Length: 445
Ligand code: PMP
Image (cartoon, rainbow, N blue to C red; front, side):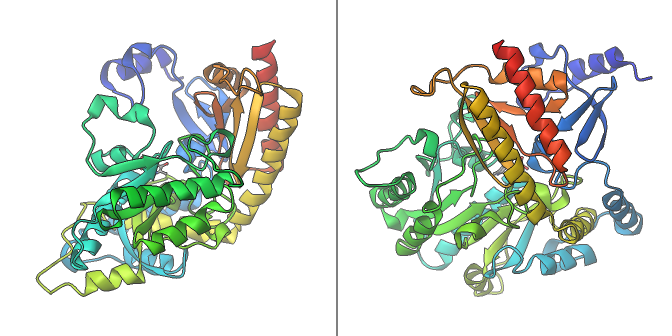
């Protein structure tokens, strides 16, 4: 039997946890194992992993095929450098496998270890692209409120969740934030006859014109905003955004770190709106989180510009773990399984069921002001009053009530997010909804 108090003592003394105040470290969940959508703590509690780790564990926990792929590659060649053109078989296979998979014009991959590194790579690619085309002033990046793009300095500066800023300011100059296409709480102005999607796209055009198109290098967006509150844009938003970017020669970076690889019910989220980005950041789901891997895919247009550089101008951007053979081997196996099980379609079906279940709860509980989702990325928003939409201030209480009843997920203020592993069954979806219902009934009495 594991001695929980001894472990907790070591944890409390020596581990600085992300997004946590050490002094509040009194009764944390310490996970010990997992199977499918279920997590098990060291004291034997079983919980549904309602956020699939951090949105990433697409195949669920305890997948032996992924474990075997890692073991096999580690035994053969765990690591080697990819600097200066050297390579390895899994990374080459994976780059080939990814070519055209997300979007037809994205055929070239640069590998990283996670989402923030991917976005940093995207921003540097944008700078280099415009420099080579003789427009070195196009360095500004337009992002959105509620965006999450990671926490390295430039990624943090692109992040529009302001709570991430104060401890580490000043931010990198040149990152701007416009209102998000947030139908429930749109923060910008809406002109008569305009939809939220049109207004939010207009905010992009106005920002480009205000800053001057010659200074704006890129626009970055999560197709569905995740950490900022599972914000699903209206259907008319991204097609307009693409047109505006084209009109003003602004590159469009899609941050598909959460939405990629089936989460939204399509293999990649922007496909739903018939839109292709110029650069796509990915991470998380590519290995189902079993090992850290991320990257960017660049369009053929950007690749040509990089290719046209003189031979002494090498690509001076590098990570030790770029193209890590073991991570890439696990990614290849993960993609094979995702496709074999057709998990994007399954996510669409389970997502629809989850959304319907949550809408049922909204009929029962006045406190649910909004229900939204795309595929297996869903949320409810708790309000005091449906008219005023004043936040209920009960998100954390609901989270705790759900944990007690066997569901682990995240509260973003009063927004309660659901993004379970894509392998979830109908019964498990129904169980999640039932737990939320029971927990709501318990906290509002
Ligand atoms: N982009 C998005 C959309 C994310 O959700 C995240 C992580 N939640 C990141 C970037 C950063 O990824 P990482 O934590 O791997 O750096």
